[in-house]
Amino acid sequence: MKLKKGLNLGGYLSQCTHNMQHYSTFIGKADIEQIAAWGFDHIRLPIDYEVLEDQEGNPKEEGYRLVHCICDCCRTNKLDVILDLHKAYGYDFNDAGNREKNDLFHNSYLQERFVDLWHRIATEFKNYDNVAFELLNEVVEKENALLWNDLIDKTVTAIRKIDLFVPIIYGGIQWNSASTLKLLKKTGR
Image (tube, rainbow, N blue to C red; front, side, top):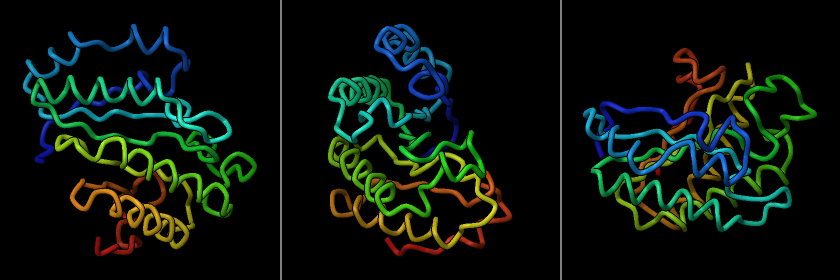
């Protein structure tokens, strides 16, 4: 997989009104075909957790079907896909610094749920050679690099139990700041 020229599909499955009417009208097969015709080689598909699971963490089959349809359409059009978890239960980059709403790095239940969601995503998409995973959009914390590294390690370990080869993307803290890359721990996986 060579990701050289991509297009982000923000507003489709993330930062949107979460309902099937929106999902079925925002992006369609013709849009994916047009993106390929423009010469792009991949799309980045931001996904809020609400598409894939309910408030209790139960999988939403209709959400997974929707993402499968996009990945299938992209594969048909020779496009790779980055599945980007844009918002996780207990974590939203829009709520930077608000521990009441953003407690992923301090709450073991939220971390377990995050890892479980990625385990389900890896299981669902393990047979796609055109899919990569982006663990979490814009980790906004100004600190917590150690806690983020620990969660990366747990999540990559869970994904690698399902798929040894899927590309996994993650950035540093402070909105994926290049200056924080040095704080990331190499996972070795």
